[in-house]
Amino acid sequence: MRGLRDKRVVVTAAAAGIGRVTAEAFAAAGARVFVCDIDDAALADFAAANPTIGTTRADVAEPGEVARLFDEALAFLGGLDVLVNNAGIKGPTGPVETLDPAEFRRCLAVNVEGMFLCTRRAVPALREAGGGVIVNLASTAGLFGFPNRTPYAASKWAVIGMTRTWAMELGPEGIRVNAVCPGPVAGPRIERVIEADAAVTGRPVAEVRARYLRTNSLRTFVDARDVAELILFLCSDHARRIHGQAIAVDGHTETLRTG
Ligand code: NAD
Picture 1 (cartoon, rainbow, N blue to C red):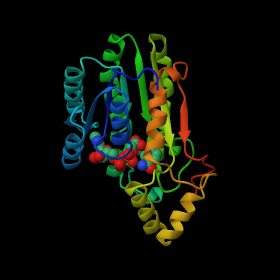
Picture 2 (cartoon, helix red, strand yellow; picture 1 turned 90 degrees about the horizontal axis):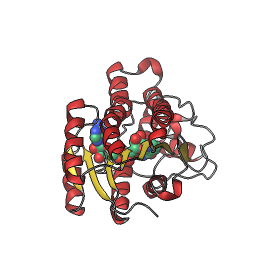
Picture 3 (cartoon, rainbow, N blue to C red; picture 1 turned 90 degrees about the vertical axis):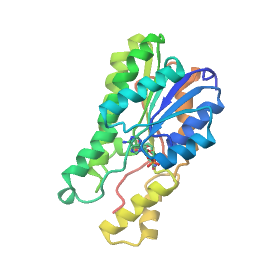
Picture 4 (spheres, rainbow, N blue to C red; picture 1 turned 180 degrees about the vertical axis):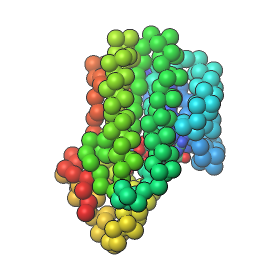
């Protein structure tokens, strides 16, 4: 894709999952990349496999750690052109009256406040570069109601609200901001979600998985690669007029009701 070579890119929570595939795809496209994660073992594994990518341990929900992340990233990269706000946790599953307020707050702290903390540190550097791109990982849970997932749905609707707000604030300075809304990504995370759903609803895991597949018209889960390719496209020159959007890569979600 045009316009990615030598771009200076930060991807949060990139030791595994969508973030890892995205960081590696940016590096393969000739970009310079710096990542953070909170999982030391996964980060060590990532660093061993990707010696040219800078890494640090940082929790995006902790303002002091985010400040250090950006100090280290800017020193490593020499500036910033792209921020991929990828960090997001699934939060607890269950009917609203059963949910633990501390778990609600942690989900919002990582998924919403973490994105705010990273963006407020990134913007001065993007401005100094003369413009740039921010991509926020939302979800189809930011486009539909999602029974039994109150904190996650709240967090992802907030991500889309922040995306549209930052698009208005930063667009005039040449900083493009978009959100990506993946459907369920095949892999261990969706398996944990399905198991949690089965535990809450008392249905067999295989039945819950079949119900999740029926939520979208293509009857599919998504690959991390599908999401990474959309993120790279949004950061490339091909997307230079795409701004303030929440774009789904989900096989066309019809509903998130699986009950
Ligand atoms: P994941 O669950 O595989 O986790 C990726 C990494 O995030 C892990 O290495 C973990 O250690 C790290 N992490 C967790 N909390 C962190 C924190 N506070 N600070 C820094 N790192 C942290 O993630 P994923 O499934 O690849 O999801 C990435 C993004 O995509 C998230 O925002 C998620 O909500 C969104 N998303 C995922 C799916 C899906 O099905 N996987 C679907 C839609 C949207």
